Amino acid sequence: MSSANAECVCRHMIAEHEPDWLRRCTKITNVDGVDRLCHCLQAIPRVMRALSLWQPWASMLVRGDKTVETRWWSTRYRGPILVCAAKRFDDENAHRDPRPQATYPLGMALGYVELYNVRYMQPGDAPHACIDYEPARYSWLTRNAVTLRDPFRVKGQQGLWSVDVSDLIQLAAIDDR
Image 1 (cartoon, rainbow, N blue to C red):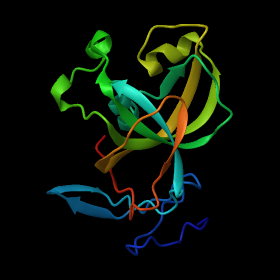
Image 2 (spheres, rainbow, N blue to C red):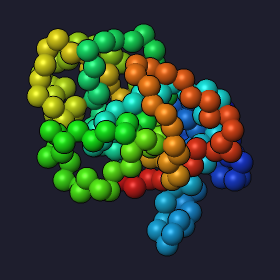
Image 3 (cartoon, helix red, strand yellow):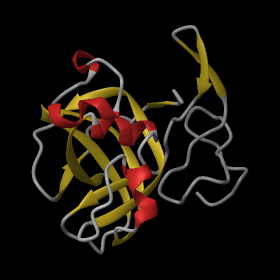
Image 4 (cartoon, helix red, strand yellow):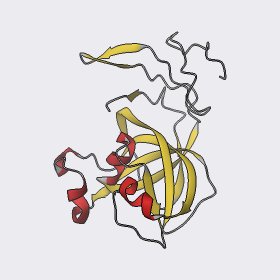
């Protein structure tokens, strides 16, 4: 879909400003008594690249509170990444996000982000990564964070890995920011 006048399956208008891989309609709908964007998400690929992160990092990334993920390795991949919470919680860094540890889902796909650039970490990346500056690390720059309305169980893996999402009718999202 490339037209601003395209319609989603819900027959709502598609947002023109969304990247090609993510076309969301802009209709306001009522979800559990709260007005939210519809987010019917029309162009999600059948197989998505995924990345496992310990909590609280995974939740912070899909909420958009964290826009830089750091790794010791680089990737040439650019595009949507399904963000999965590993089965471990990073107790050492729990202070970086004030929410109670019990509220974080583990072993679940939580949402997705668009990976648009990878570079060596720069000092200005540290606040967006919610960590201290480490020059030997790579900064994975993300945008267009989306939180899934219904997170689903996944068995995480190391590195970038593939998840078949074709059996999901849609990856419904919420706009909770």
